[in-house]
Image (cartoon, rainbow, N blue to C red; front, top):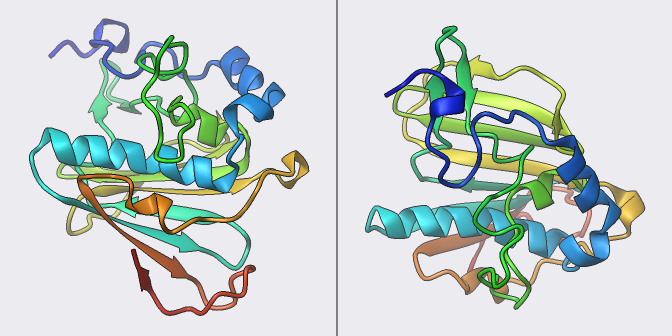
Length: 216
């Protein structure tokens, strides 16, 4: 495989663009379009990738959604982990799913629908309206994490110690100034054919639900 990002094949995102600030600004400026479902929308966007990956490799996947005390929500799956490659300068480059346009869905005339009926637009619609977001991926070749503010990376891609298993975890806190709904409907989380989803609450989570896991 060629080791220059501008020559890597574009499948879901353009590897040659690290951050598309204009795209992120468009999302932030139009929350009524891209964030109509609030936290529910964001969680379903993340789950859609896990479901798609599980279908592609022909197995059932698993995801755990956790509501945290600080109001953030994390979605962890057991997939292959976001594609991460070494470029011609020996840098590790992770597919820019948070900071750039999802080329399959964002401007599609008829994008696929999420389980609650609104269009799937890609991970940037989760990152752009989030005060902060942490994207951690575990692959067979290594693990990395990075933090974003409103979709723009605010840290380097940091390599993590080796872990058992693979997968991706996305934890985000929507900007409260958007006034987006924070309710999660467990019924909608059942809307993916290739995923088993579990909903949990961290002790003391802001919505007051019990800490015990709630399989859905």
